[in-house]
Amino acid sequence: MTTSNVTFNYYPRCPNPGLTVGVFPHSDGSLITVILQDDNGGLYVRATDGSWIHVQPINGALIVNIGDVLQIMSNDKYKSVEHRVVANGSKNRVSVPVFVTPRPNAVIGPLSEAMESGEQPLYKEVVYSDYSSHHFGKKHDGKKSLDFARI
Ligand SMILES: O=C(O)CCC(=O)C(=O)O
Ligand SMILES: [Fe+2]
Image (cartoon, rainbow, N blue to C red; front, side):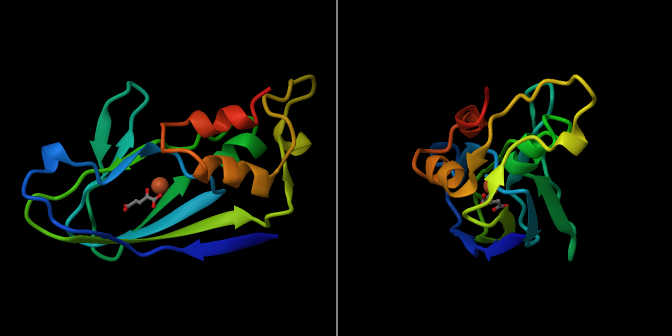
């Protein structure tokens, strides 16, 4: 069973975007996140070579991001996406992410169905509320939250 949390983000325009941070690089502590963004853009995702790719806003399109829980449950078959938001120099920006998460008391860990025979689990089982308390209890720092569950 899952829970969905809707957040409304408002990023005021910043005349000097180089001096501010919209949202620090992080991955979401969700299974998946579905994001509606306006036409102004500002969301960047980290490519495998470490560079940042701007997510071009497309009117009415929804962005689906993989979160840490799916990475854990798939034993790294699916990787959560590191992302950040950069402030816009001339326009205010609005985004509406919907975070789909397990119930707080759910125990999460690699699913046996997601592992080949003999494959070792890369994560231990943790209670989701402990994972999310750890995730939100510190400043955003890339994909460091995963270390909480990593073996
Ligand atoms: O504003 C966005 O496009 C993304 C926001 C975000 O990454 C978050 O709220 O976790
Ligand atoms: Fe995020």
